[in-house]
Image (tube, rainbow, N blue to C red):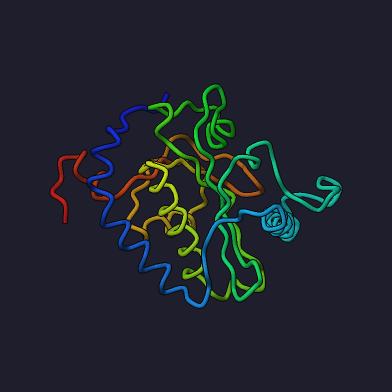
Amino acid sequence: MITGAPPIEASARRAGLVDALAERMIAQAEPVRFGLATSPGEKEAVFRLRYAVVLERGWGRPADFPDGLERDEYDADALHIVAWNDRRLVGACRLVCPRPGRPLPTEAAFGLTIEPRGRVIDAGRLCVARADRWLGAKLWGGLLARAWIELRALGFTWACSVVTPAGVRLYRRLGIRLEPLAAPRWVWGERRFPILAKPAAEADAEAGRPEA
């Protein structure tokens, strides 16, 4: 069991700096635009992009996805963050809110219980179209920045996720400190580990270190 998350109020007081940095990262990614997939067509485009990435990376076979969509039981009520370059979907990630009686995706993948219940949101399924990866950290970082803004709007400041070492670097660019929750496992064809993410200023304060 993972415990020790602070009250929501304490988290919110220290999250303002990350808010400002997230807005700057989104602005730096122009002309790419970030938003939420709201229509059935937009969500299907997200699932098709995820499917394409899964096949490209060798994480699955076409027979595993007969409809050409990569989706699971969490997608129906998840928030899907999208990145558009002109009218073309170039990247996506998702947020899964806590729900009574249902483990978050990170908890399910690693057999964890992350507390306090109801105060941690799950961020995952971060992907970028192969043709647009030349945009690099601007695109990846912009997706995470928009995800941060959306989870803040929902009242969260803590998130769990399953990440690779490259994912760790992206979170840190956003001013987020990561706490490993368990040993790495093979997930989606790579060694990944579960993390708890929170604003770096908050982590420093909890450790008794002065904030910069």
